[in-house]
Image (cartoon, rainbow, N blue to C red):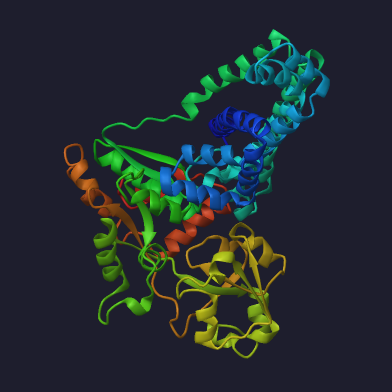
Amino acid sequence: MSWSLIFEHLFIVLAASILSVCIGLPLGILAYVFPKARKAILWVVDLLQTIPALALLGIIMVFIGAGKPTVIAGITLYSLLPIVRNTCLGLQEVDPGVKEAARGMGMSKAYRVLRVEFPLALPTVFTGIRIAVVSAIGTAVFAAFVGGGGLGGIITRAIRIQNMGLLLAGTGALMVIAVVLDLLMGRFEEMVRKSRGGSRKLWLPVAAVLLVFVLLLPYGMKSTGENELLLYDGDYSETQIMHHMVKMLVEDRTDLTVTIQDQMSQVNNFNALVGDNHSCDLMISYDGTLLTTFLHLDTADVPEGVSIYDYANQVAGERHGVRLLEKLGFDNTYAIAVPQSIAEEYGLETVSDLVPVADRLVFGAEHEFFTLEGSMKYGPFTDFYGLKFKSTAPVDVSLKYSAIQQGSFDVTEVYATDGLNRKADLKVLEDDRSFFPDYNGALLVREDTFERFADAAPNLEEVLNLLAGQIANEDMVEMTYQVDVLGRTVDDVAREFLVSRGLLTN
């Protein structure tokens, strides 16, 4: 964890809070002034609050792309409810006698609301702002899923690899930010209540917030250069290792600068890769993932005699203008695994060995594996093998390994090259009937990338393909184990591998 991540998180919170105040206060005033519109305004902000945070960010990302703007827009919408409601409520609770006196003095309605009633309602209004800001600190954690940066990536990774120190550090940083901001806002709220909104000194904290926001702008606005190859950091160590290898290799052998942007999930990374408003140039992917997850096809759609790799490449090029480079050498396919103790107890070596004992075992995996989309999921898998498990236990992907180690379930789905399989002491069962297809790792690149960088890096494709066939499954397992279990940095592990293969010239 670094200070830059903390400052990024604080920037996101402040930017969203400022926007939500600028939008929420006028909406709250409108809801108060126009009773006929009040129900509609409050209904809309209530509805926004019911949308799951990740779903809201996903919807926004479709329209404005990946990155901090998506996160800031999402948190802004999420923060409107307490601000709008408290603004409307505060104005409604102003003493009717004061309102009548202002009306009797001949004040216009707009002047009366803004100059008399709003200052008196400010304590209640500020309570809503305070709630919104503190809530935004936690909601900003979801920025990691759409390339928004901040502390969310640290916390997600810590949960997945069961690193309590890293988890406490990330959570502790969030708590410190929340406590400090809450104390400062509490002091400001006290000033508001004492002054009844009439002191000019109240502008000093507002100016201070704006000053801090300006100072944090470098952590929220990053420009890109002409000869800059853009990637996103992944939410798994395997993705991070491969992207950092690309950075080292390209910068070593070309005149390009490679920028690895904030962490992002695979699906969102693909969405950021394709289209005219793309925000990255390439990513690590797999032929099976490209076929089933990104292109929404099944293995049954692949013509006879054509490989998944070739067919997925063909369709991806036609639909999205992207293609896979040469295979890297590792096959990160789905696999079924059980704790060593379960394997020994029931004599399990293959998936078929589960058939006679499945009714005594609980199957657990991440929620995505239980969805109906695609053929590489729980339903088709169990139907294919004739498995009838005692029960199922969907969990968050970050909690899967800790759950199986704690005995929450007996059988799970894993990725073949995940170093955490070794840490959890899991036995990977042989897919003896070949249900799961290949998931060959390869770099997925926009077709126009090589043309755009032809002057600065005419050999870019050749350089990237230096990795082809270099990384076996055992190599990737070892590298992810080094990062996730032994705590080594991604850069150290990636550089060490490249040097061992003679791919770095310095």
